Image (cartoon, rainbow, N blue to C red; front, side, top):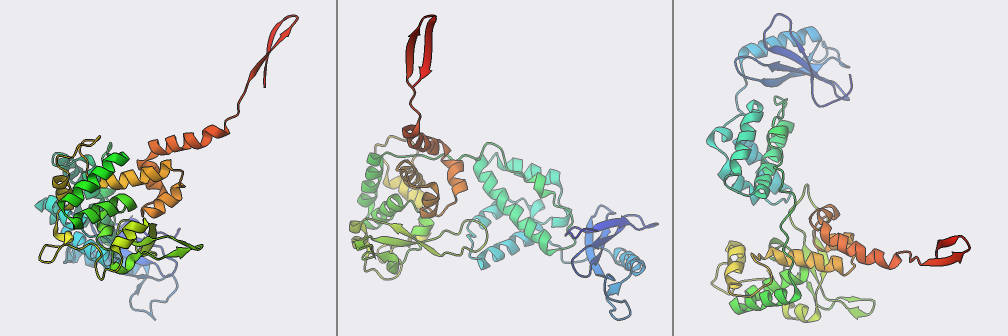
Length: 391
């Protein structure tokens, strides 16, 4: 049998709803019992297989016959306690995400939308129809893109639960929580230079501290969550390269994506005037005045919306993220390679191509046009008519 994570199951003769499973590994395999009766479906590991070790030397090693007897005994004892519910799966995923340095901000929002029935359901007993019905119910409360972000967290939590509990052999969430169609392309508002300057001006009229935050968002294209993690020492106002002063910020990477990122900070160029204004600070770079709540406790989206109220812009419904989209497109149209644009904005080439493909097409057209082969039709008059020859 090929080595694989999923056990091979065989019905135990004469016993209804009890199967003996064998998980083939590189070393000793594992015997697993699966019980599918009385409305349940659960599994439990019951011992090691006698692939290499002798039973007489290792009491926990079972032959095929002894594994059948043990499977009958475990099935008769009933389903093990300590249910791996959706609630415990979400809790475990949140803790695992935090340990890996991931962004756990989306997890509490997921809990708000889980039904009581789904929250207390064992992961091994989840049904595809129930999961699909819950996903579809979210469409009455939020946009498709928000639904997809929500169910992505749930899928990840359930996958982690299945990876750590060998009783869970089925994963109905693969189909029950499929992404909602029509939400793949983000609504990216691209602003003119005049719009960007108007937004920065409005932010400074709100307060000098908010003006600095919005100006940095416009200049660097960083996410607000990255900007709020900047420290005073991240400003390198006197950085020299090839004999020239090239001020930059050591921008913290975001907590988006899978796994732990190898690079904690990336250099992002800024102007000399901006670097000079920000240099010399200690601790968190972007702070609120003494006595006021820190930016982390402020709803930045709402604050931005109020600050720009009344500003005439060429685009409706402008959010602070429009500054990021505009920065990305500005660099693409300036001819900066996509991989460099992705690195400067802490994203991937794939995401750039997915969300900004129309601008990449414009950029590619500008690059390709000078290389076009120019053809000139020369008309040569012959005795028997006209003949065209490409020049």
